[in-house]
Length: 301
Image (cartoon, rainbow, N blue to C red; front, side, top):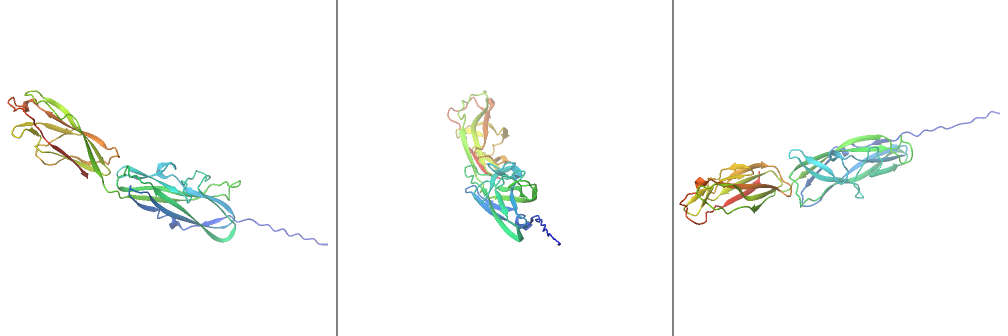
């Protein structure tokens, strides 16, 4: 009697994947204004065939080095940043640690002899910042898409080494209209004029400058850097932001700051000071009030 035994040996083929490199290559470009939250939805499509496999993927932190509470895009030309984040379809912040566990996107692909497509959406969101407008500009960040699979890993739902990575560039074009404002807090505005007695440099006003773009400050003196009662005058000198300024041309704007950096919502403070030399005060000065009017103007640079 002849006995034959036939043993069938099979081995699962490793999974293979396909995706269009152009899916993520263009990145995302958003137009944003601080008045309202802006979002942009993008997709990644992965094709799989052969062995069944657990997969996970997500995006790295980018320039901010943190996932939560937000990622950060930067406009290096003005040294400003804007917060944004990536969310999955269930509105969870998209995170991904070094070995793939904890990624927001996970799935199980069944064994198949032909490629099957799997599509996933994610959203980039920039929150409204109406109370603290960021300067207009182009803010960029680059995160990395990371895809892991469990084929070579041990244990159920354990992901092995990263299977592939691909950069994903995010551009946020901030189109906020430029906004500027000035707030004045008066200092000492009353002086006793005595012949021969100097009045030292004294703060007469503190100006709070607020602007979301680079800006200029102009100042003008109605009387040309003199106090007057209409017929008699007393000359004074002035400084702004610590710098001597020449206001001697009556009612003519003088540029005292140019190209100043954008401020935060609290602004920056600068002082206007005046000084009067005792020699400018005549012994025969008529009794009365001597005044001048100074005007401040802020504008986008």
